[in-house]
Amino acid sequence: MGMNAKDRTEIMMAIGNHDEETGTAVSDISAALILADKSDVHRDRVVNTNIATFGKHDRVNYAVTNTLLELDKENRKVILSINIDTKICPVLDYFEIFMERTMMSKYAAKYLNVWFELVINNTKLL
Image (cartoon, rainbow, N blue to C red; front, top):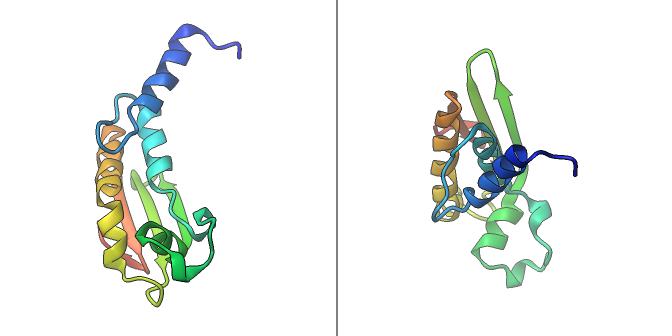
């Protein structure tokens, strides 16, 4: 790969510290990985599209019709915008599954000295 040991170590630390149960941002790279990974919710993630057999994770992911993670440099914030089809599942189901991930994203943004903003169905929640 042509990477020096310091760069390889940074990447390994980022990967090792992005788990919801034990991970936290320990570097700029790990904070960026957390923000990218924990915002990955979307219909495309659902392999089985038979709604009758969905568990809660599949239902929530399938209900998300649009996700956008953007950086607002001027206002120093990271904005996660999500559209959830509430005919498929209520917004509360999203939080049942993604609360830990949302908090992890908030702390990762804080590590980078930016604000984490969550917008669901055009309503700012954080």
